[in-house]
Image (tube, rainbow, N blue to C red; front, side):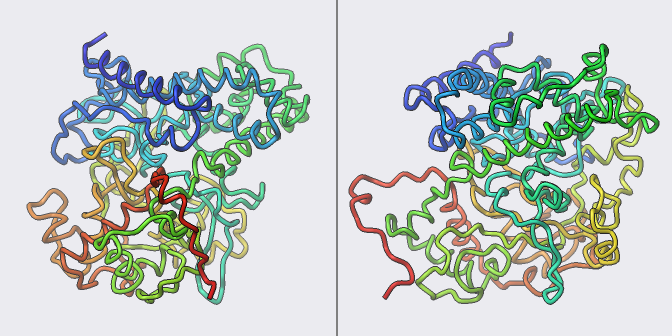
Length: 551
């Protein structure tokens, strides 16, 4: 084992051990906020198409140049899952709420739910980054995170791991999204999960649960060949008894075929002529489908819990009367609600364009309206997905269009061209052209959550922007500054590449806001107050909370 890996693993173990000495439940939000990985040792290379200058396989666990943050993230997942399984063994003493949230978290941290036993939901959703990507090197370059399936027949600079076209959207606060619906008077879709809103919640009444059903069988993510594989793996797990306790003894009453282990060790997608390779009877398939629903509903319950969606930021303390914003933060808050128009989509709890209103109508704002917008992002040509246009060793081609691929977001889903079928084609498909190139407005909560000040995050659906300053500057100037090619000198400062899909570009709320650089900085300062885990002093706790809206 290389010295850098030993250092990273040691650091991760020390952090988690310290956290466990504070509380017996490693899943508490305060502990997770403190858990982090050491600064990245891997040098960040310059921009390259498809990130062709990044040898992904060498940076992953066991690689020749394993990234320290990759090692630390793996150690964090392993030790977290080990601790959770110990709690599962004592789960009979818990009430239903704590049983089901414990189950959901234990499932999220289980790498064995992937065909190669190497990828968990938590692999791409680290708590110490706001449930986003866990490593600076991939956030800064590929933006999308490596999936669980290596590509062994790739020729450099082709990617040697499967990647998707988007970066992982945080699942914090996503559980509060409404079921996807079209508001005709407003001409907008509201709700759902995923950047393209395809986890509608229509079938389960729960968008977050339907979102959790996607990555396990997405070929460029965890990569299972059949949802039944996830159920079978769960039946073999250390938390199988907790599933049957909560959801019933029928959960695993399934006659599994003798070759199930072999099938489920093979990455997807399934062959076109055999869409469900785990061959089950009709009744057993129905049982498996129900259990898969229950597995992901447990995940959604955990995602809605304070472990994930804590409402514990400095801004929350400010709304409760337990903290004061600095002058810069308060200026940013006022700009956010006024001149910068941020509050028109990222709802902050007060009326839009009302910067001087001191009383919040909503003291638990989600900083999203759950609609979709085309803000004019260019293609992020650093995404390896653009070069996944050849069959891998399993015969799978992730992106046959190569560099000609255009991400149409919500429009593609509505037109039945997305990663999940449109459940309401009769009414929604005709609206697809109006929503091509639009993506869900993400919550701004935890937008700056990171383990170290130098940790690099990626922003927007394709990860094109790499800092809050860049993001605010884009909203301020993207339609005012000259156009330039990606990788050009001055890009993101004095010029911007053209939008990927200009036809539906939002030209009324962003792009030419007239903010000064100092005003951009003020907004960034305010956004940093939205990070969960803010600790107030004991003297502050003694103060009575402000009763917002009272006279």
